Image (cartoon, rainbow, N blue to C red; front, side, top):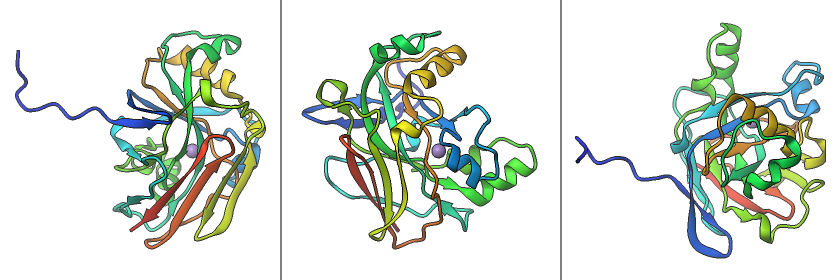
Length: 231
Ligand code: MN
């Protein structure tokens, strides 16, 4: 059997402590999983979070300790940063109870859910899908995956993002409305999770615009930090 053209290469992320890489299957994202971010977006912060997706090849891998370059995307004049804790799945399953979720997690990473906010707002207003606002090329800069076996307890870790050295977002993982177990429980009720899935767990308040020339540094305490230069 041969293909009519060469299939695309598998998107992958570095893994801390090994030269082996983590192959990416799907990218799930949780919307409005921090109350203060839901409020800054015009909601009460008391509604349940929800899900959307990005294509796997939206991942912009950030190699160990190296800054990555992200091209400013087309069609927008209001590109926003959203720093997020990313959960990497290595054991698939459906209807996973929150208490069992840890058995499915390979590790953690720092990611940016980059957003064409003007297009997202326009689509929301018209009741249309968000894909053009969220799922564009290079919209998911993601750092190396820290295996759970090497990670400390991150349930109260600080999560921060700075732009050109100035802090814009700061919170802790404990502020998540749905914790990681609850995210996996809800997500796996809707889709069968597969090895290689990434889950962007939601962003804290302080999202704002970035422009070409800006440098973003996103961090999760105990997981790592990534540097993204926007050009
Ligand atoms: Mn987000």
